[in-house]
Length: 250
DNA sequence: TGCTCGATTACCT
DNA sequence: GGTAATCGAGCAA
Image (cartoon, rainbow, N blue to C red; front, side, top):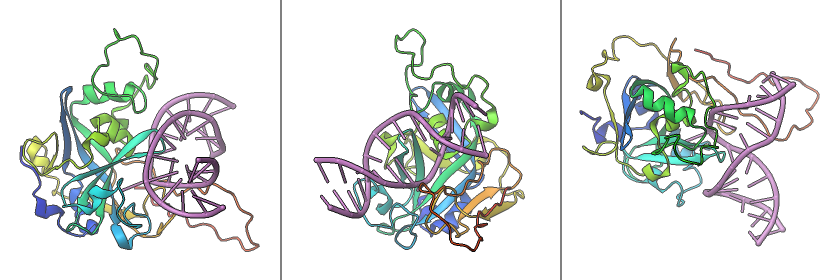
């Protein structure tokens, strides 16, 4: 299966991000292969980007971001789900592209079972024979194909990506996690004429105005835009101008 | 050592 | 449309 080469990722994340749209990300696990065509991504620019996990420097958690390009940085968020990034630029820069949403193009049945199994509990044994089926089993009764990988947490669940894949090399032949051009899966060339839109990133409070989110226009697999929700409502001054929710729906 | 809050999601009203 | 769930990194004391 042809993969994107490492030099593809050896560029600023703002250049890599739009080029990833239309590419296919897959995870070949013991349970089977699930692949998604990427329709929404966000660029994070490391040390110069206050919203980036790498902004405050190297830690054990984000170490992969400071490594060589073409590796996956996986982190656990909100205690409930994982998010996956692809590292860009030369080592030490801390740049990465967050994979936000995709369309499942292979292994939809397996992806659906994982998504239906409940949050974070996925993986190997989904057989009802096991005794501990209590965790969220049976929820998501009518899960739409559109929603299988619509959102960063959902995408990771559909592909069964967790911290065990942190640092995985997506460029290495034979690796369980990979990414290639759409043609690798016999899909029509993505370069045909997909309209790419840009806008503010989702759910961040720092540098929220930077238009570093990229998505394919008019694609139903793109996640909903949400601006950052402040935790503590604070009393406002008199003047009322708080209409800065960059509402840019596709 | 303890506390706050996040690159979110699913469920309830 | 609002919010509970859930855990760990990062910061304050």
